[in-house]
Length: 173
Image (cartoon, rainbow, N blue to C red; front, side):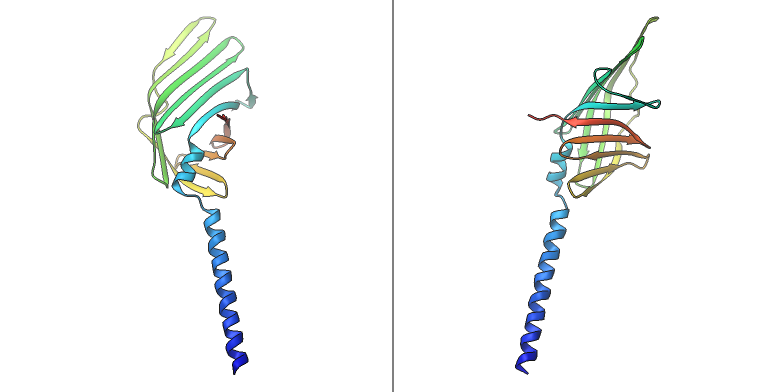
């Protein structure tokens, strides 16, 4: 009888230990809202712009995007051939731990060509574009219902619209 009780207690201890270990692994795999926010926020430099089957890199393209304290700034320049394109946009974003939404309130697009300069002041969309946010290990994934996606790590951010279109590197302080 004593042996059975001892075996049961050992089994209970092992089960408790395994349960605690399982909880620790689950918690380590998840990120808090503040941890996700700290990965999202920052200053990013453009490393690649993929368009029309080409992969453009600096100095042909250059850009920055800044996401800090609810504000977003996006500036990008492409100087290829006779045409030069500059896009500058700023707006705001919100993040509640599971949904990230952003939109631009002021936008300008300058297209320089041999025939002159064309200025457009329309933003790419009106209102806010929303993304469901999930964490996977040390990555943050943001996906919209329109097919756009951000993948953010401590070192970089990619933006996809069906396929990767821009790759950004996080700037260090």
